[in-house]
Structure formats: structure tokens, C-alpha cells
Length: 156
Image 1 (cartoon, helix red, strand yellow):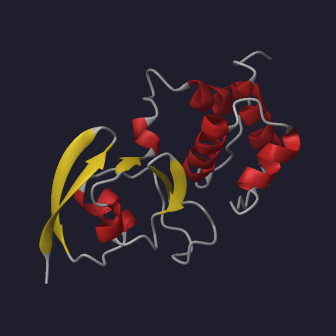
Image 2 (cartoon, rainbow, N blue to C red):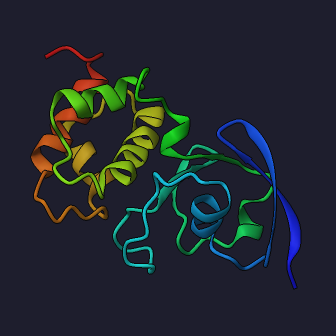
């Protein structure tokens, strides 16, 4: 039975009416029009649906809406805008890290979680943090460079 669930998404309190076991991804995309997180595999294996939940990268395609209620949800849209990208988003732009862009938001979310806990990661740290995120275009080297660039403060 649908019920009203209150979410905090990108610092804004939002109410949605849905089944408690609805995947958070569907609510973000269909109800809140936040389309940065993508539907990839639907099994939490590819990372395209990643969002931050209380600062930790989580796969929204398998996270029930009820588990997200009362927690801080941050999507790619909450990190910056096209006019004012975050430092990490700008580093992805500068490194031309995303070829098709499908994996990009999940990669950036995972990198954001990494940088929040380890602001000066090594290349191995970045690779480990992004290991479970898939990129079919093969942009992994540019993605790693972008995360390291952001950690250095954007310097080339």
C-alpha cells in the first residue's frame, strides 16, 4: 500500500507517495525528476545508480525507499550545477573523463565519498574505490586522473 515518505534530497525536504519497498532510484528519477543517477543493471553491480546516503556511496537501484527516509541523500545534481560544477565535477570535465557519460554520475559519487574520507588518495586508493563501477567506454584512466586532479586542488 502506498504511503507518504519524507526524504531529504540535496538539502531539500521532499514528500513522495510510494510503496515502501520501491527502489530509491525510481523515486529520484520518476517522481523528483533527478535523472543524474542512471538505471544500469538493476542489481547493484554496475554503479550507474550510485548516490550518497549520509555521505556514503550507495546503489539506489536496490535501496528501498523506506531505508532512505530520514537520511541525507545527495545525488549528482546536489554536488554542483553546469554553471558552477563542484571541484570534482570540474576535474572530470578538464580530464574529459567521461566519454558517453552513462557511468559518470556514479563514478563522481563514489569519488566524492572517497575524497570526503581520504582527501589525498593514492592512485591505488582511487582504483580501489571505483573498482566496482563499470565503464563500457574504457575511460578508467581518465577517470582516475580526474579524481587525483580534484584531490590536488585542480592543478594540472
